[in-house]
Image (cartoon, rainbow, N blue to C red):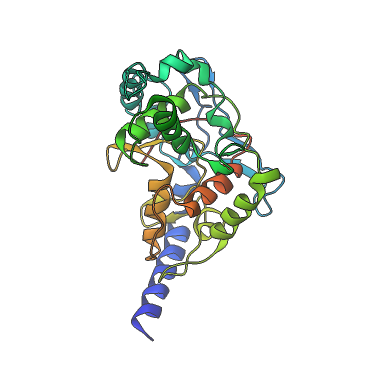
Length: 289
């Protein structure tokens, strides 16, 4: 047996043993908790019927349902949610004049709350640009075209904070990403990426998040990989994380060459994965392990 095949066999064996030996832990962790209500008044749908385009899952679940009760509780109150520190920073940036045009975000949009509902429909087709755009792409378009300011790095802290602010004002609203019309070709590309095995371990997104969700791989309780909670504050790296950074980490874990945040491939994958969460509530900034 080659070293590669031996490694793959050991990983598969480890996954099987973990799933069998610890299934009772995985099945119990986070399930049966009180529904997620933020600040006592924002009701979050964390499980619902799967969108019609999904073939192998009948009920979709937010990653919140797969966390421990202690982690779940961090989202119930904004004072306990460490991701809200980034939102507070972005509120200051929102009102700060930058660039050659002497404008801030507030100059055009007023208060951030005017963007309620925006996060729920992104990524989306932009007719003028002739492309599917993510929230991050639109933020940079506003900065460079309307403010005359420098673009953020795609996964920079300031960008992720601003994305978290825009997400926060849409919490509780249902994800409703369009996948038809001009966006369909990008969606199909994302779907192909989701089901394609890559890397030395020959794993696809679906192998973990469709075939093995609710099982344990090492100490990680696998979720369905829903992204309605992004940006996500991860306790293991103590910061807000963008969805493309998470994609990058997952691809790297398969021991494959990964795409860059903001690449066409990750934009397509984000559109597809976001559509798998249609019907769940916008939840970000959420808290995960």
